[in-house]
Length: 308
Length: 225
Image (cartoon, rainbow over all chains, first blue to last red; front, side, top):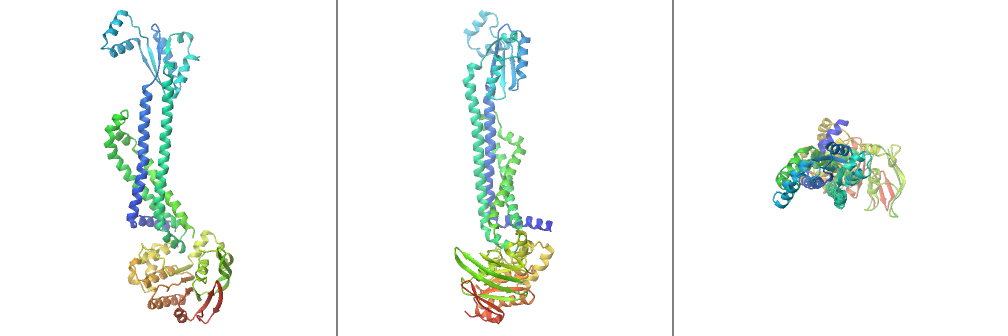
């Protein structure tokens, strides 16, 4: 009996889908728009993340050392910094490399180069460029040098300056921008997701409204609520899955077309490569959303007409 | 078998049924007659549990049907076949599928459906229209499909609410003959109609309703209004 019913439910669900060809096509198209919006929001969030990461990577906290600082002392400070949970990486630039870079930067400026030659000795100290995991954490890293117990006074004395105070406003603004951008991205995603789901729900509700007389007849011949509802849920799932397959396929040519533009404008992020790499995440997101939207919308829409 | 016990129904303070009491024996054929608005259809809706009485009870084999759980209600409804003036066929299904659906809802297997549906259609003289959709059938043929659907699960009771209301005299006669045949095979039939000719040709028990009350219960089958 259970398997007979299951077979009938699946067969009836498929029949609803195939028989109402035009209506099913409309539902699939509306669901496709919904799922496309969800996918597009996912892409936008990825691009936003990449842009934020790029901006964050461009700022760092620089620790400058006095010119006579011993290398083992600098390496000890580097090692202590790397142990901080807020720090994602520390780059050590020796005095020699700093001078090399300075000369390269001012290659066309003969006055500066002459001045350097006049001094004779290397006037630049070594530096440590500290990258925080999050832009809001630079302040706590800077406090490492003021309230430090991990470094000896001897080691602290070789630190010439930490540029946090100079860049404090930039750090704070960036931190606020990143936080606001992320919040905005998530809020827009949630709003778009809810609107899309409501549109899909109303479309399926309209389709089921057309079948309300049929549902009433089903109830009068003694069909159980599950027996009436299940084929509609199956057909709702079919709308969702077919729309998901369509949207996932459509994203291949779209991301291919956008790949150069995104690579150029969004810090080297190739959207086509990103889609291919994360295809299974997109499959889960779009396929799962389609399945849940189709099934849930049908379930809720039929419920109204089961009260005979 | 059936006992309507002091049934009253009010819609917005207006009394549609007023203390209706009568019993129906197994295999009986009853006609409910009365003017429009007399309460015939409301009474049938009580039996199908589409409507609940404001007062009173409807007993089916000693069970008050309005106290049944959802599951028991489904089982109860499978013991009642219903035919309506507007046929209520599923428009996107063939005659075969309309009848098969009632069997599917009752949990019958594909083999049972394949064997019983053609038989039900033969019984209503529609063996040659098995794959026709409702829009390809005449009014009389649609009503016969509806009757086949109503009897395919071998119900204890067949309710026919104005089944000949939209039909010409020839089709009306055919439908009445089919209902008589079904009753002869052992199914209780409750028919509502306005048609005096139908009542006269049946010669069975007639209950006359007026303003929601029973004004006559005549075992001789006379239609007096």
